[in-house]
Length: 298
Picture 1 (cartoon, rainbow, N blue to C red):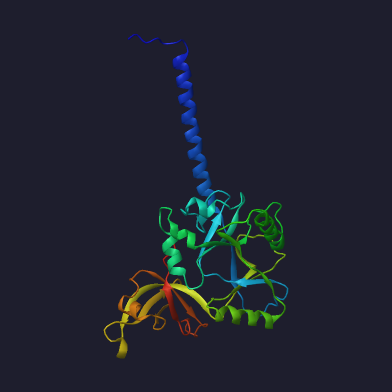
Picture 2: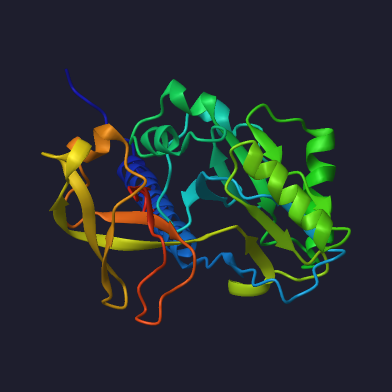
């Protein structure tokens, strides 16, 4: 069979091919730019509350022990810019503007939450979580925290979401109110509070406008060795030897479950511990093991 080649047909096919290639190239460039932008986003982070500042009139909320997440209007990322992979329904009802929040499954569910969000493929486990929203980093016009949250309230009032919630804020009446609210949260199994200046604008990095309020401090260190146990802990872990970021080495002997003593954290792993101030030597007072920090790369 003889095929007829129409004049200009080859040129048209070539032009279409070029358009397709250019379109794909543009999509790749935009995707790369989007990923780089997400990695370059610097979140607003809290400082430790030392008790000297009067935060009456500020807003307080429970400090949720989950995984920090950033929604850019289309994609959900970790605080360091790595894309999460939730099922489509988890993010389908989120707004077309940026949000910051915590992926949270409830109190004392951090380990399960990490296991859920680290998986590379979407799965139903995500539907046990909520995206707990606490800020709008790119609000237009950029205004106070009070104004930024108003944008979220307005959106979700008109567009309710199944898997997203706004973190409840309570106005601090006085220091006694702050202390009693902290008592309540700790009594329910929470780890502490976040207090924010409602008039503060969004400022990337550590900010004096956001403060962590806890009965104890926490930090991270690298596991470098083991001390064998005695008595009921004979034959298993007695204490974990760790090194902090400044090079200080010390032992953590409490906070471990029986299972963790029999299968202690791997050497080289990053662990979270809590403590109550420092000795003159620089060693943390009363360090207590909390967990392996498996999300440190996120």
